[in-house]
Length: 253
Image (cartoon, rainbow, N blue to C red):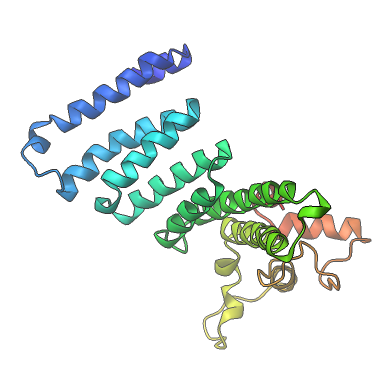
């Protein structure tokens, strides 16, 4: 029903449908007799609350921030880790899109990272948004010191830190999306028994990833970059087509 009205952009009706679904879930015979802090009850109702939150995230950022904040406070600690991750990520995204309380958004993304599976591609999305939010914070802080009279080490340091964290998280994002650790796992063990033959493209990719996506280096392009010759365009095109399975993920960098 909500999908039909979404096509017609009847947002008020859609919101009412999502709210009604939550009420129905709360009054379900299977749920009604459970205590308010029962984990099964909370998770079941959150399924519908999360639908409403996602609706707000797409259509009303202010409501997404307010409603998401209420959910974090009221049911957040009772949710399973994957639902906590989803909730923190959604509210962090709303705050980042609004450019409201960027520090708060960064904290929520950090909590989403803590509860995420390291091998889950969702980590790539979280690190991407976290990197972009650090970039927003970098811009915000930079604007505060445009007047030379306001420049001081205490004000410059956070600007540099947020620039570095933006680059670092965007690099982590690409590594997760491309699953480089899994694809290049043959290089992480000393045993050759049972390993598949290592291809030249794997070696070239390993060298490139270790250098370009080194999160300890804050520069996007290291000054003495060895694994990629900018002058060899044709060779680079062929290499990138084989090395990157999901090329758009590198665009934010």
